[in-house]
Amino acid sequence: MVYICGMRYLWILAGLLVMGWAQDTSEGAEEAPSPAPAPPRRIRWKVSFYQAYLEVGYNRFMGLPADLATSFQGLGSVKFNFQFMKMLRIGSYVGDGPGIVPRGVYFDVGVGPGIVTREVRFEKNAVLYRDTTGFLTYTFDTLVTVQGYSAKSKFQLGYLRIPLELGTRYKGFDLAVFGYVDILAWARQKRKYSTNDESIKQIRAGNKNFGTQRLQYGVGGRVGYDWIGAFFNFNLSPLWRSTKGPDNVRAIQVGIYIYRSFYKRSRSSIRWRGYSS
Image (cartoon, rainbow, N blue to C red):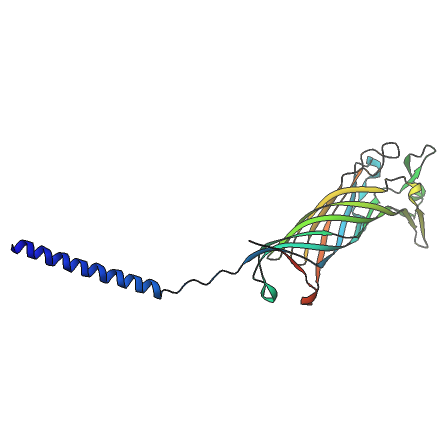
């Protein structure tokens, strides 16, 4: 009998403890603060900014005959380019309206006009011309054999460039790849003779004298940090058709660039588009 009464009291005590623990737990759960809702994360794109590049590049024509080897001497094969592009920026952002905050990596797609100059200086004083069949050939000026004379020979092509670039900028690092189409704007050869007493310059202009393909295309890339970096581009198309000049000659250019972005500062002029995720 005593045993049964003792067990009854133990069960009553256990029930009271369980009820108290459950009550404390529910009260604690009610008092715990609920987490703040996370701001919406959005993928957006913005079209209201531009990029400009000033490039200083070393030029070379790969595949030229050995006699027409080019030289870096005197910076004779170094020229400036200028590229201006309108950009479509795609990125991940948090928030909305004036409080929007960028997150992660941007991707930029750009297109716009540019000017590209390809100039090479020949090691020998070459004279370029087209023969009676229209094929580009060359000879070498003998005037430099005269005592006291020196001569320089350069060949320059200028193009209007239309690129399509895909790149990203992350924490100041700039990385991009691009394809391009070049449309010939001018072609000329410059020869300069000098002695102690005088200097003579001769220029032969017009692509009819050289017969290069007016339309070129190629690929390139750039990598940099903040406002400066390195670039390269390579023509996939040959400089001359096989029936018009040396076969399989292609232009290559490497150098450095200076980068600048231009944004529309007015909030009302910035148009954000995209979707939430």
